Length: 123
Image 1 (tube, helix red, strand yellow):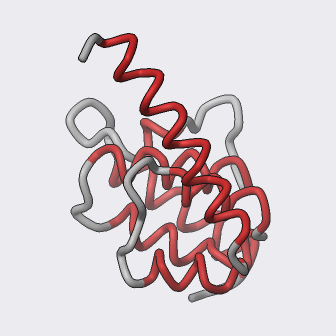
Image 2 (cartoon, one colour; image 1 turned 30 degrees about the vertical axis):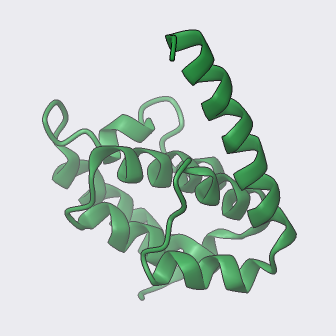
């Protein structure tokens, strides 16, 4: 398979996966995330981000970012979370909450946690 064919296949499968998540009730999609069922094309994050509020998913997504999940899971989780609530939009990007090899993720998460507490309260 050529890279172009792979890319086309991945994009088509991603669109289909997002449509499946979008058709599900938000509560069920959030339950899938709680159960660590994230799908295969990272679209679960964007389906939730388009429908949820920070109160719905803030602490759940934060806990995922704190965990030892792989980079791509954390990156897409961070992108979705920041699309809903970003207290430092000119500074805080998804990689700063997920790229442990390059960024001081723990410091950024601690600062984000403080803002989350102020915005929606303690977990």
